[in-house]
Structures are given as structure tokens and as C-alpha cells.
Amino acid sequence: MKLGFIGCGNMATAMISGMINNHIVEATDIIASDASLQSLKNAEEKLGILTTSDNLTVATSVDVLFLSVKPQFYETVIKEIAQDIKKSTIIVTIAAGQSLKRVESLFERTLKLIRTMPNTPALVSEGITAVCRNDQVTEEEFTLVMNLLRGFGIAEEVPEHLMDAVVAVSGSSPAYVFILIEAMADAAVAEGMPRDKAYRFAAQAVLGSAKMVLETGMHPGALKDMVCSPGGTTIDAVQSLEKTGFRSSIMEAMKVCAEKSRKLS
Image 1 (cartoon, rainbow, N blue to C red):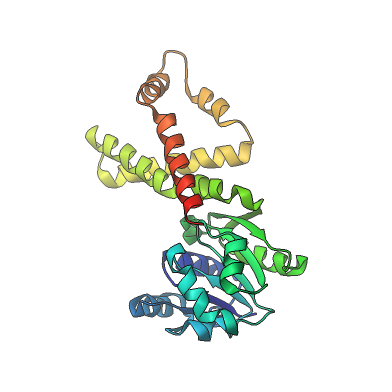
Image 2: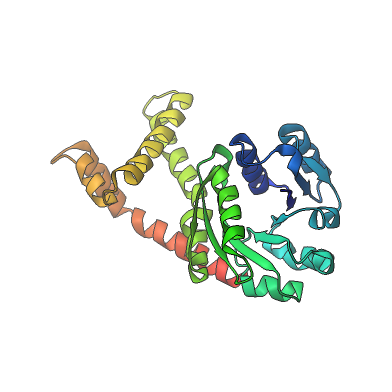
């Protein structure tokens, strides 16, 4: 099985790295193209994959083709390769706002299309990817692609109408979490902790908290209550967060993110 990536930026690199490191596919079975020669050089050196500056070479030589360019470049790239794509090729999109219907209209013919929304924790095999497909993709083909996506984390099928919500809750949310970790570390530094320790303590606290939600199955509110002893330090901190609109800030940010995703379609 040959895999191709048109676009070899951060997200594609994270996905490829996860697939290779978890022995889902061999590096020599992957080919990628990109407008940046430096990106191709980095991918070839760090990942050991084949590279080319020609999108058409990638599109016509693989079984599964990942379109990993920014949404604004989809129309240009698809027009370049549309007429030469084999009908048997499975096309996987990873861009926000690009619906199955829109992508099919850009190709101007019916093809096997799978829409996904991964996130950058794929780089450490802790990504989560939402997936939907059109009716041209068989169960066997869908299973194949799901196995590829699980090479760098969790992959779950979702209805396409939830994809904009997925962009907000997982696609873009690593940025929110990084801001949280940075802010926690800054506050710890202000309290006298060395910065390297501050980042480690903050990041591990976030990692451990997320793992508790996933592994205990308990409601996040119940887990929060477990930390908040009566009259203790944590409840005072939570009260301060509520005063400054911590929850509403996150919810508003996600609303804006989802709205922007919808406008990209």
C-alpha cells in the first residue's frame, strides 16, 4: 500500500511520524510533495520518506492520498490533479471547512472521499481524529484508513455536520491548552519556581488530569469536586477563575473557532 501527502507541513509530518513510529506503514511506502523545498528536505532527512515537488507524481502513484494543504489552497491543488486521479484512489482530506460535497465538486467527478480532522498531538501518538466518508468508500477501505489514522492516536467516525464542532473541541484546542500551560508556568515562576520545572509541573498536571477523565469515566465536574476540599486552596482558585470568566472565555473561543470553520466551506 502506497500513501501520498500533498503538503508536508506540521500536521502532515506529525501524522507520518506517528504512522512510521508505530509500524503502521514503512517510510519507503510514503511519498510527499510540498511547495517548500526546505520542508521536503526536512521530511526526507527526519522521516526517511520519498519526496517530490510535483503534486501530480504523488497523486497518480499512491493508493491513499492525503490532501494536507491549507483550506485556501484546496481549489488550486485539486484542479491540478483532478483529471489524473485514479478512480480507485482513496482521497483523505484534513482541512477545516472542506465538506465532502465541496471537495467532490472541485474534482468535478465522483471519487472515494474521506474527510478527517486530526490534531497536532499526533506528533506524540496522542492525536484524536474525527472521520466521515462518502458512499463510494467501502467498509474495507474505511477500515484501512481508520487503521492508518489510529497509527497516531484515536480515530472516531462522526456525522459530517459535527465537523465544525470537532475543529473547535480538538482540532484547534491544543493551542488553548498550550496557553493554559504557559500561563500556569508563568504563575509558578512568579512564585519562585525555576522555569523548566514550572513547565514540567504544569504540563504533567494537564496530562494527568486528562488521563483521569478518559480512564475513570467520571464527569469532569465530579473530578473537580474531588480536588476542592471545603475551605481549601483549590476552591479559592476556582472561585477566582469563575470571577474572571474562565469557562465563558473557553466556550466563546470555541464558538468563534467553529464559526470560522463553517465560513471556510
